[in-house]
Length: 137
Image (cartoon, rainbow, N blue to C red; front, side):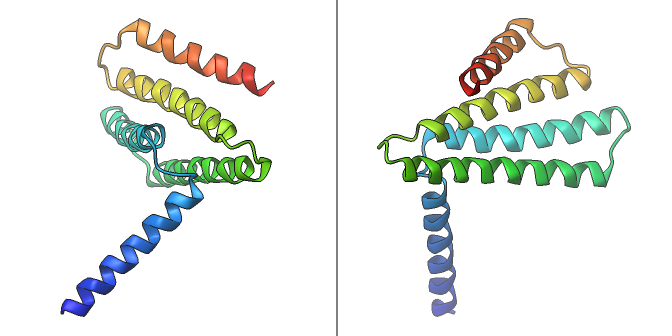
């Protein structure tokens, strides 16, 4: 039993280390993105339940989209590493862009469920998304 627990800890530590390397480290921006991704999915499901539009196919597409966004962060971290700039410029830009998109989506989901949303929050997140779009051009 003790060796099984040790092997599970070893497996978990190995996976966490590999993911941390792939994502270019684990910082507060990445943690915020992971939280936003989860909250967006949950609020999307709750909004769909509220509107009586719950669909397992749409839910699966949402999960696939979230995983692809995390792959994008990992690829950006690798490109940053290959560019040799010493700082994760591309990764950070992509994380902030995705944070803004997820934030807007969370507010839209909350509004779809009938909860009033402060307009200034939506404006700030849309401005963040717009600034990230301009950096990409």
